Length: 277
Image 1: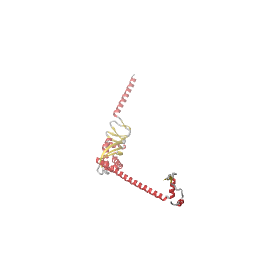
Image 2: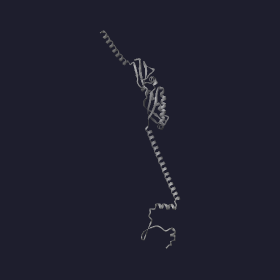
Image 3: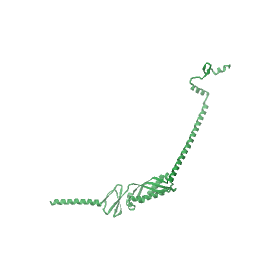
């Protein structure tokens, strides 16, 4: 009887002990989980450690150790920055920057800068504004529009070099839109209209010149054709053409008895022998 009670007592202790352990584990959390696309910054009594935790589950000392996770995935940040061109035109630029944190430097980044939001506000935004102003100041407003690809490449390279020491990797910079003052926009529109009208006028003049030349060439061709025909026409050819076009009817004249066919059946020698009356 005592043996059964002892077994039950021990079983109850195990159950209670297990429950207490589970509750303690849930409260104290002697482990941490780093999700996909993240790295863990480990801190011991608030001090950042050199070790960086990869994806997965990691044991830690509760209370003593804490972990802050940072995303190392590529992120897109949309920004709007004001600048001026070489000819002192005000420009508002909408940009999209694709960037990510260097996985090997997350502890340094978190220690010196902070989390993703602090990276954008403290590092990314000021750097983009400065790089954009430096790039646009080298080009006129018209060159900023016509040489957009060249400007993008310059901003892209400059921003990469600027943010590399901070452990921020710039993947790509997209220049979404340029905004100019209303006066400059109207001037650009007027210039485009004038250029289109000039091109249309040039096309009209060119077409008229081509049409006139074509008419001259046709006239020359007709004159040359007529000249060749005059050189090649002989009495025999004319007679042959007349025979080919004859419809089988003779010309007629009006006489006393009606119409008579107008035909000369006598040979030329006979006609010459007929005396005049």
